[in-house]
Length: 215
Image 1 (tube, rainbow, N blue to C red):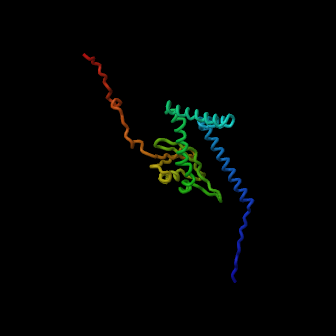
Image 2: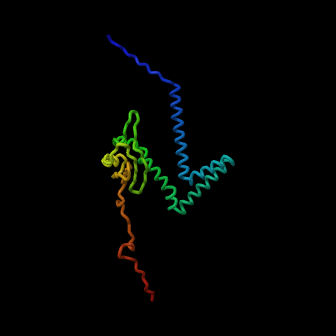
Image 3: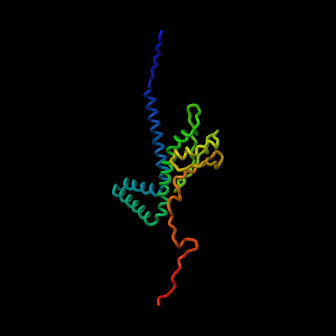
């Protein structure tokens, strides 16, 4: 005698709508928080942008465009007159933030899981927390918090995996605090490009000024 088992799956439209609403609200809150955080980090952009919107709202779009044009002109003048401070306070910080996300943060969960550094407790998956990312010219420094039960040697033995996964030439892992590991990623060789040294700056040589007077 054959027994046929029929399974019926019912969908709850109200529950699906509620899940969609909660997911959308969570993403919206995250976007607002990220935008506010970037506005705090870069007031040289957020303040002129806010003033432009306020001027356009209260006095008309011509005033808004005028304020925006003045802000852009000010940024250009800053870039031309003092490129060092412009790089330090604006472009350098933007570059560091973007590369930190692009190189490490966006792939951190995937890479730590692939390296066997995540743990599971029932249906929950725990990922080592990425504490900080410092972007340098040739060397990036990443610090992470180990999960309970992790051994420092486990992380140290994953150095080659980290270098390959994050696209670096070499990675070195060191324990720098209780449960805190530091991963140094070498992106390029600092001695690969030749450096031109002026002849006058070489040890033992200096320019001798001709003191002879014309006869």
